[in-house]
Image (cartoon, rainbow, N blue to C red; front, side, top):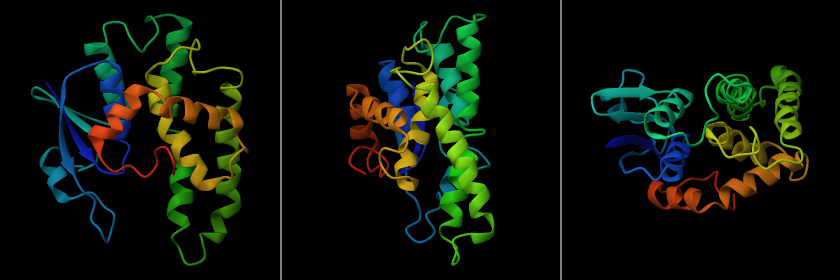
Length: 210
């Protein structure tokens, strides 16, 4: 059985959603952030030296990184669900979105969140960060125009990967600036599988009603 090393208020919430979507049995090992530093506890380092969540154990195999976990679970346990057929143009598009979600898209989001905690709000970097945020959130918003899901208009691991980007966006921008992204976020959060993952995962401040 898959074991999810799940940190509260983290990107591992989308891994729970993935497992619910595939109707897989799984076990949650819960970890809590430090109340002062907001950092992950050192106990996670006993599972993997980086001590970061999400990570899963599947038998003796330990896998880190959201994209790698999503790819592994879908290939090994998906039975053809949540990913296009391999060696098709749609699959190449799927892989691009899967890696983009934690590559290009997340960097300006994380920079914004971290610099907002500085006394001057990271003033020296603010223009560049805002420019990159506009570029990347605008790119995802445009890709979703008139569609429900990113690839072939069918729910896939790419949507699960990009869900965290969609959920962080309202913390940084007023509602309505990226309307297709707003609709995407509302759509995925309304799914029964997403709701079940919330029930099992515990507190998650980026979910519905934030």
